[in-house]
Length: 257
Image (cartoon, rainbow, N blue to C red; front, side, top):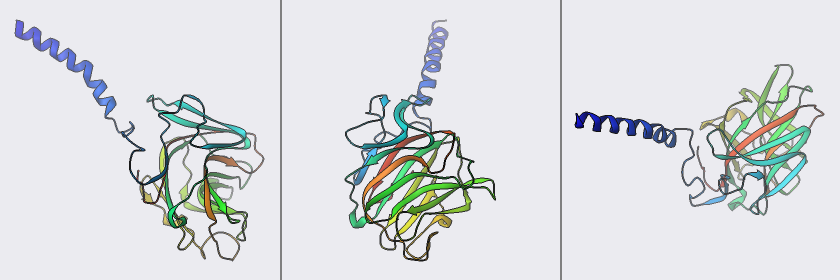
């Protein structure tokens, strides 16, 4: 009888502990030391940032009709909540940025609540890199294409000789309502921008010096000094846009998901 009672107690204890163990090791949980790996040029996982206004001494803020806030997600982990009203903007800015050879990799985990479907050809940016030189490079952005009734990812640029363009592709629909890991590479040897989604390369989105979506002149990187992560919509719009970010990282080598 004593043995049966002991086993019952042990079973009850194991049953109580099991959900905690499963929660701690579930695939959705944060990997420990996400920003501890060597060679990172910038990294922010928001775990040491207080809940509330999205500010830090480690990065700047650029907003107009928008805001940044650090909040807890359903798992209790801290994430950055970006919100923009109408055609506003809200960006976390990595200033005083310098990459070896002006080339670097980036990685973000991102979820967009909804993408714009008005007006026609509405254009949005999530990642932007600027510096010494006229081109504003947008490795992650997209556009609502009314002829296809779809929002599509595309690399883009503005402000330089190539003009204002977004190199969207039907093979890369912008998916709302779920977390994605997005990686990009800026390769100064050919002014090339490449993208991966959840570890899968999207070569259709690649642009380079001679192959891009703008005017028929060379596409040339500036000397990058600032990388911006957030949201901007450029056309008049009455919507509210909510975007969540986690594990933002920049590195001289590919970071991975």
